[in-house]
Amino acid sequence: MRALPFHQVDVFSATPFKGNPLAVIAGADDFDDAKMQAIANWTNLSETTFLSRPQDAAADYRVRIFTPTRELPFAGHPTLGSCHVWLALGGQPKGREVIQECGAGLVRIKRDGARLAFAAPPLRRSGEVSAEMKAQLARALGIAEQDIRAAQWVDNGPGWVAVLLGSRSELLSLKHDVSVLPDQSLGVVAPWDPARDGGEVQFEVRAFMGRGGEDPVTGSLNASLAQWLIGAGRAPVRYVAAQGTVLGRAGRVHVAQDGETIWIGGDVATCIAGTITL
Image (tube, rainbow, N blue to C red; front, side, top):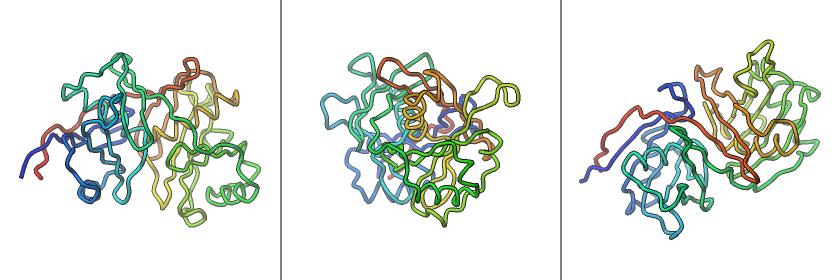
């Protein structure tokens, strides 16, 4: 038996317990898939990550990302949380940016003061949804089709399809029926009205996961939404998105386009730091 570094962090919030939790285990070089999956099932968080030495010489570290039931090639809050832990454990990047190796390839991460931001990965699927899919999305969200301002595929790994609504109040009142699209991860976004909602945030986001459940704050979804909204001229090149409101969270995702790169940033707070015995 041996003890390895174990951290539980809260991502996309400077205030502990208001963001999205993540478990991170370092020194997992000799873990097989079955062991990582078993641990992720045990932590029962939306994701658990495992840090090891990189296989690609260009990377600073490698991360494997597991939900309680499967491995993901990429996810946003595990990217920022894993980088936060790697740095806290003394990791030193080879260059100005941290380069993370994951199932989706190499991901660039930069430090902006205390905040971390990752470069949005390319979309694997984009474009408008079919008329049949739009009708299914409306049924899944319990709304009329005419309430959908736009709907797009915005898949950067987890399979996201996105819906744009007209107001924050519409979004917060949604009741998701997972039985309509049981295996489809679905993101919904709506603008804040400065007069009614305030001016510190520009968009509200909700993420309904395939096979049920709502995610508190979702980096991969916000990355793909930003690529769509900014690219279509529906959002400015810098904005803040709120997520997790209906779950009692206060997630804040900081989006900024710099040249051809869209950066997805957020604060990370360490809640637990210790060891796990294996």
